[in-house]
Amino acid sequence: GDSVTQMEGPVTLSEEAFLTINCTYTATGYPSLFWYVQYPGEGLQLLLKATKADDKGSNKGFEATYRKETTSFHLEKGSVQVSDSAVYFCALSESDDMRFGAGTRLTVKP
Amino acid sequence: KAGVTQTPRYLIKTRGQQVTLSCSPISGHRSVSWYQQTPGQGLQFLFEYFSETQRNKGNFPGRFSGRQFSNSRSEMNVSTLELGDSALYLCASSLKGLEPQHFGDGTRLSIL
Image (cartoon, rainbow over all chains, first blue to last red):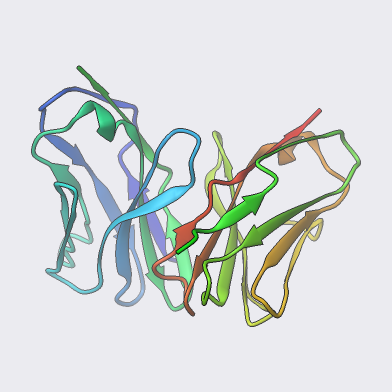
């Protein structure tokens, strides 16, 4: 079945560092791909999405490109801030089936 | 536009009891999904309701059940609670399918 694998955390970075959180997926067809973010004490919020190959989703300085050839959707940000500290989830949706990765906890230190 | 509202935010129960959690979706959203989030298992899909019908179901025992009302509000019920049911239960709504989903802040259920 479909699945999502994302890099294990926790990830700790200094403010203004470059961020990459790896995400790869397994799917039978052509899923939509998502990154969600969960801040402490809150539910998940959609951060960005991409619906077809080579699409780039972007929001709040975060970017991810749908790479069909490598079945990947890595999350990147050029300069992280303390306020980016949260848990990040990669997810896919195909045929009314939604799968989430295990989540990666990011801590940004000033 | 009001977001997804889950009540209560926190709940403490003892083993063997049953519990009902409530979720009010964003106005106009007809799909409501439920997830269980634990440190060990991560985010696991419980079930999805659309127009009062269960459309998708995850791999959870029959103690976990749900329903959806004509106004799209949904409830989730867990019977004969076990210690392992302690978790954050998240509800998400969307217009018609499973994407994009808008999540509530969750109900944190603790079993003593």
